[in-house]
Each structure stands twice: as C-alpha cells, then as structure tokens.
Length: 301
Image 1: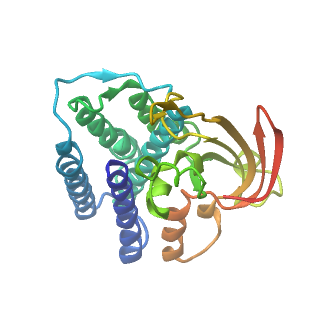
Image 2: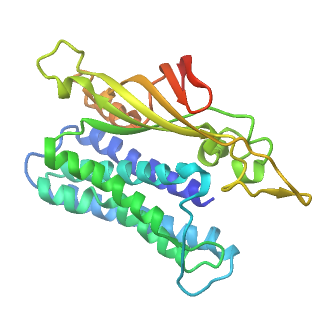
C-alpha cells in the first residue's frame, strides 16, 4: 500500500503536467502567477493527501515508536534504493516542468521544483522513523538525494537532461511463491516484485555528439536488476527451514528512445511523450552476469 500510494502520487503529478500542456499548450515566457499558484496549490494538496493516506491506511496498522533509524542497505540487492533514486528523479523532473510551464525562473525551478521528489520522499522517511515496524533509512535518504541531484546536476552542467532515468518491468516466477511480499497480480507485482524490475540510465547519443548523424531520439541505456529474491536478505525461514535463494545481480546494455526528442508540433504529443519517457522502450538487450557471462535477449522489457 505504501509503495502504491507513492506511485499514485507520481502518476497524479504526471497527469497534472499533461493537463496543463493540453489546456494551455506552451509554457509561459514570463511569470504567470495564476499558473504558478495553481501548480503550488495542486502539488501541495496531492502531496498532503498522499501523506495523510499513508498515515491512515499504512502506518496506523503498526505500533508507533520514538524516532529511530535503521540500516537496510544490504536488502533486495539494493533494488529498493534504485527505486528511490528513480522516484526522486521523476518527481523532481515533473516539479521543475510544472514551474517551467508557469514561467518561473530557472533558478526557482531547480530550487523548488526539482527538489519535489526529495522533499516528499524525505517526509515519508520521517513517518517510517516513527513506526516500530520500520525506521528512518539513511540509505533511502541518500538515494532520494541522488535522484534529485541527477536532475539538478545535469541542468546546471548542460541545461538539458542528457541522461534520463527509466524503469521497465516483466513478470517473474517469484511473485507466486510469496504473493504477500512480492505482489498478487500485474499491478502489485510491478510495484513490489524487485525480481522483474530494471532501472536504467538512458543517455542521448546526439546530445554528446552533436555533429554526428546519430538520430536525435536515439539513446544508449545501461540497466541494473536483480533476480532470485524472495526476501530482503538471505535468511528467509519457512516452516522452521531456511529457504535457499539463488540471488544474483544483473547488468544490461541496450538501445532506447528519448521520446521527448521526437520532433512534433503537437503540444498534446509532447505532453504524452514527456509522461511516458520514464519507461524504457523494449529493444534487443545484452545481459551481463557474474556466473553465466553474457546473455542475449531479442527483446527485453
């Protein structure tokens, strides 16, 4: 439920970006206070309601405690940390885009918009810190910082997003073995089954080689995933017996498409491309693992 509400927040902000572009088309060249106020109020309301929902629907089922921290950096082959980087990056991108649509200065876009994901996810970590079941994770906090930094750093260095963080998912056999933990059904599994998730850094080739004939939309992507995980750590005990887990890290190399660089005069399509550019486009892919060497996937998602 907690992860679902986090992604619903991300989805709502995405819809906000789409609605603003389709109704008003181009971003304002100068500060539009009505747009800015609408953005601030809507994002504050969505964020506040999401945190309230988490507090009532998730944390209320667990005993409260004094604020405390935990060290969960060894869990899930760090796939959960990549999820935090991705969420922070995408929320920060959306926050900056909405302020850009409002005509807010570039400095304020980065200061108040690109930190949206970091701020929201840090608030969730604080709620974790007051729950006896969880705890404030410095690893999660660091990942949230990295996600915001990935967006802000590129804007400061290049004034564009040459490297985009993306996500892909495929269903695995592991969810059916622990549906309570890894999800039951496609939507739950996409949010909870780390075995089927892959997080990508997708780099636009033309932006690095501007004088080349490489298509402006073509990207090279490197991905990270994990497999064989039935629990956060190795020590899963069922019926007083230790369950063997063949856990392994996976690294990927593939092509991708930057949808935002596809040329179109339609503001509607630009908005759609912006929203769905967080998803990796399926392509032939090389998988690199420590044990089995190199594996080729004709199409990987």
